[in-house]
Image 1 (cartoon, helix red, strand yellow):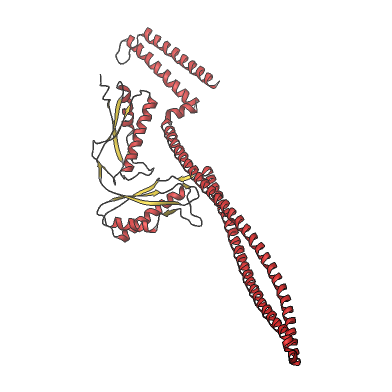
Image 2 (spheres, one colour; image 1 turned 30 degrees about the vertical axis):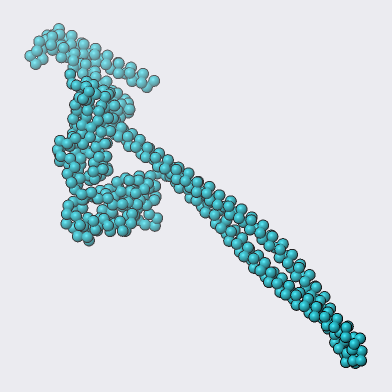
Length: 467
């Protein structure tokens, strides 16, 4: 309904202005007025043209006043497209990181499955040891029963031995009293001596058996104690495996939730800030320059939401050894160097950002007139042409970053004037068929002297000659 009203208002305003312009033209024609020394007929035509211009201007002004969308389309379209491109890039990067985290979670789940198999194996070993322990206990009980039986037999033999000994002593007494009956009792005495020797031997045998049974019982008791100790160790290992598995799963779940719900302050490989280190400095001077640079990086990281618990800083260098190596390497150079602070991993808001220092020597990478990059444009639609040119400029920035150029405050390196960009769009639309758009170095380009200033040239594609 709002659009219908707006169109009606525009039609009414255009009709009124057209009517007024027509009346003025008629009056000018009747009065035969002349502007700038022109004939009345030509003056009437100029009045009609001015009326048309006023109608178009009034229509655009009415649309601009009446609609916020029209004002946005006229004055902020480029900012909207740039924001949309940035959001799309961030979305793709975040999606890639989420896929990587899901792969890590799958790997951790695989590790958890392996731990579960190990736990099952330990449980099986525990059951086997328990069965062995039960067997040993049964053997011990049987040996104990045998020992008890042997002790009972030993007591019986001892009693018989004592009785036989008494008989022997009685027989000796009888021998002393009755020597006359020696021949008669000699056989009885020899039998008694033989029986006594036999009982003594049997007594010694039973005593040895008793000693062996005692040793066997002690051995079985020691085996039982070792089995109990092994069972206790296996129980502790089993509980430890369970706790480790639960800890791994909980940590992986917590990290995945943080990544899914959290905001990234920095992406892996993102350049936080860059600076230039001059040649001829001592080690202490280079160290001081780098520490000053890292303080600037730290302020930037704090503004982006990174932080270290309990500290007022947010940046950690990869290692002290890495920092010292960079200091010594720069102190030995005789030329300017571009130094970058690059994030080595994705950093969530609230976490510290870990950076490594990457340096590039100052060198000439493009001479004036060299082609930095090019693209073929086949479309004639303004929006598609603009997208193709923006993609070309993005590729120029990527090339500059790969060559080690010093970055601007927004992290980019490429630069082209607005007029050059608009002229290139117009030239693409003017030429028939596919065209090649070249990004040509506008000046000599050095890594330590930015930005990578280019100009856009347009020429017909090789398979489509100009007409």
